[in-house]
Image (cartoon, rainbow, N blue to C red):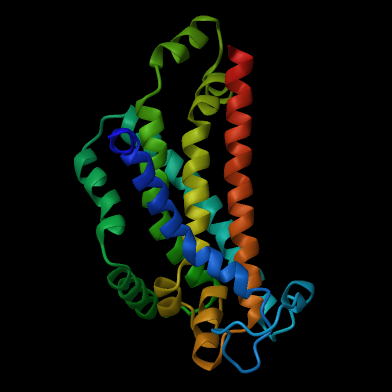
Length: 266
């Protein structure tokens, strides 16, 4: 009975750990096979331990070029979506205007709409405008579908802000710009950062919308998809593992910084 009682008390924790382990299992497989040296084109069976993929990650033609392009697109898309999304979020929370409810509903459409529908719609728009498909069409498309996620993240943060803090700053003779920079922006920063990180991840990882609007441009997800048909290089596993580790380090660093700030305030 003791074990049964212990199991009941920790059932939620155990279920959560098992779910987390199941979600992280593909990352473990990718990491393990990044040290594999396959004998054929396909990296699906373990053969020999090797670090060649880590010492020469650009050993496959166009691999690092597509990776650099995806990082560049993700950076610019994050910047554009974060700036526009932050402005829209503040406008929706702080101001009352006509069609405000309709705008709120339209913001959620890209999140609820299947990506293939949005991809086809953007492609139709670009073709009707006579725009040549390439870097700029991908960038515009990424900003469009990342915008909604940034608005939702920033809007949730802005709605939880106490307006009395800004009123106190104005009572102390702070101007509108000074109040925004020193009071409003620092409070909204966690929501803005969350939206920016989400936009970067979505842009870097996107395949469907990019594939429709890329033309002859090849991003990293498109390179992976094309390589999988001929045989996935081990270098893709190494780069995927490195990106996962970077994401984990960013999250851990954010948690450490947050805990330090809480301790300093306490």
